[in-house]
Length: 436
Image (cartoon, rainbow, N blue to C red; front, top):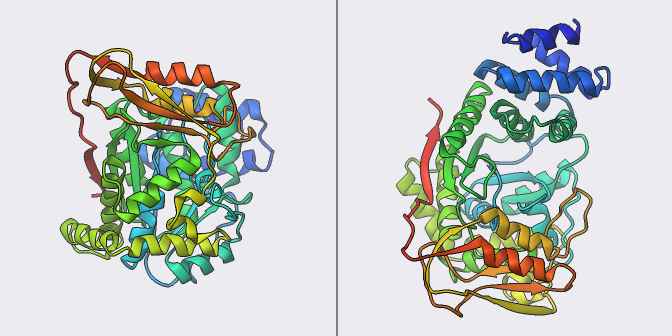
């Protein structure tokens, strides 16, 4: 089998066989196929696209490129969720404890943030003492003890995905639905969850800005799950404004804790509850959405969800006291209010720019190896449609360094558009996608 024949076949619009896809993935992973030929095939895929069978085959080949943790030792129904990325999206820290409190087992391997999107690993590592460098055995042990665990990705999990994504990033082939779907689902399938729930974002703060593109990605991933024998469903959700109010690692952890206490309502809490209910239905732990919602609400109001989060933090080496006193989290030296310059209504919020403003303060990374400051970031005080008066505070910056302060301040101010009339309301959840 020759890679140049495979490149030509896909360039000319042909469907690659399972064997051709497996050969490409394994040979590129072990270094037999050089970057320039892999890049040529990726570009051919970008132009000619892949059908559902090819995409599923690519996903399985990437899944099988490295070791797969044995989670069979975890008792009960193993559930996983994934968000396609956004700003102030801290749903994992709310959803996973609630699902665990309802009897599900959530074993999750998460990544770090890059660009305007945050990473769950960075958020959890802002808690004093938390260590997410864990073995698969640690992951299973912690899940068996408290019902959930979130750890960092090990080096031998789906190595083909890391190589392929790095190449896609520098060859203009990131935004292809089959390549995106296979990257996401290969990691989900490698963990061996019994059911998977996906949160596919759409809007100006998401990778899939158009709703039709988000739906195409959601349906592709649900179909991959079906073909792999894993019940998979997706919610297509709005990212035309930050999901929560806090953007920054310790700030987002505090908001998640406040949501689990029942002290904070809004889109972040509402979506977290909806995702938790969807996970219970997907895993067969609730017969209907209404029953699942009732279970999740009871887990929230009783405090059992917060107790699960505190126990997971303790088992990860952190201080569970942060769930009682969020002032124990890292705190910035300075808070600076940002005020609006004219009266009107909050219209469009340029969500990605809000995330970039927090990144400029040190809350995120422009490059993969950039250091981050867990204490800094920002909090929005307004949502789309809110009336404001000139001089009202629309946000607050949490600052440890003035190096990029003025740029961050200007970017946050320009990201919140003020209009004379309230904007058209957008739903938080556009639709649900489930396998046939």
